Length: 92
Image (cartoon, rainbow, N blue to C red; front, side):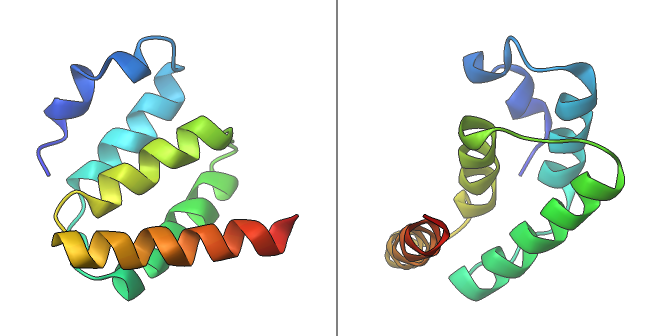
């Protein structure tokens, strides 16, 4: 994904410069094209954010997931959504 696309996303108008930088780095990395790779990338991104002292709220995490899903075929996006939905259900 071209990271510059994020700069035109209205959801990012109020995001801190540190978080925007992190998202730009994430968008610039090569992503997997299936749900398993996306889950691994999301876990790595979460760990990296914690190490850098960057925290994301739920809407920001949703945006990260959308970045990771962008290059997936539609059926893999649906699988990823189902996996994420189950993971969120387990946290409650």
